[in-house]
Length: 428
Image 1: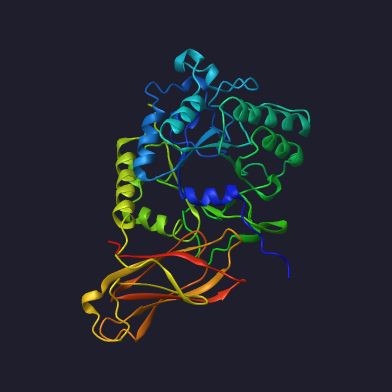
Image 2: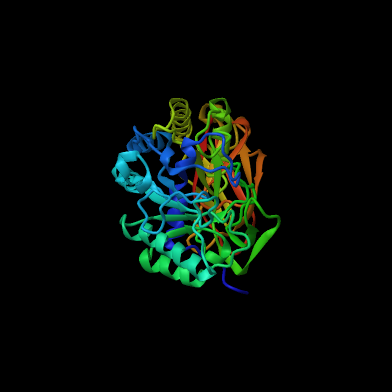
């Protein structure tokens, strides 16, 4: 039997981040109505965020509960948010700060001031009249490496590099050379990318913010991009946690569509169906042409943070998790009486149990069941939830039950497993 793939230290840290904020900001922020690959030109002269305040972005992200942030340093349109020496289509050739500004610098500094992990997005694709013309694939790869090197050299430690494969179909990159340079410049960096780029994190397969109940970390293939059907296979199964990206509005970049901001209930459900299914949650907001997160967006994100904290900060006053026998775990009221009768005064109303698995040696749990013991006859119990994988965290919601004790039984696992944390909540 082959050894179970294990996470790296960086992957375990990534899962502990849980929730990130994506910032799509760039030349598109000044030309509302555009769509990817629409071919409509966006002159650099239009870029002028007179009130740019990346610290405002970070305050909103912090209040929303995020722990890491990602900036679109160059999207598919090719516009660079830093003064790149390898392209004229950048902030250096705009009215903003008379061409002396650097959005990446302001973003990175704001992240560090507010304790956010720093993530940079880079799309290798580009289109339009501003796209640089190359004689060969090697010249394109040189340009790619040169720009990535600027980002990974000039701004200190970068925690996360997010590669968007969309638009790269059909171009063959020198992956080994490019990946080698990335890790030479930033040995501890985490990468979100397609299989050939040596990923540390994988795409969940949709841009709606949801992971499946059955969410294994060890995979051998996954979807490639929004523009292709099917999936790309790995040479061997690897430990790759998923990230669930989604949009706050109907568009990634700022547009005149405030009415499309998602409801609080929908966003809270997405949080529970991403972080609560062992993945990370990455929600996008598009700063406007002032360089600020619009007031309505900021309000909704802060509402989300408040709801997460209100529901998941303080668990019900049950005991710490106890392993009763192999694969059987429980939490209970501190004065639980095992005699089997009359436990109503020691019962609590519960509709959510949060499980956490020790995954340092790999993900093991494949299926489990949750039981609630009855308040009057606690030797009797009812099955209230059936689940699959646990991983970093599993948020298990069910109809409210009044119970003095909750038991979890692992019904299927890939070798030895351990639940090291189990907490009960009443989520409103």
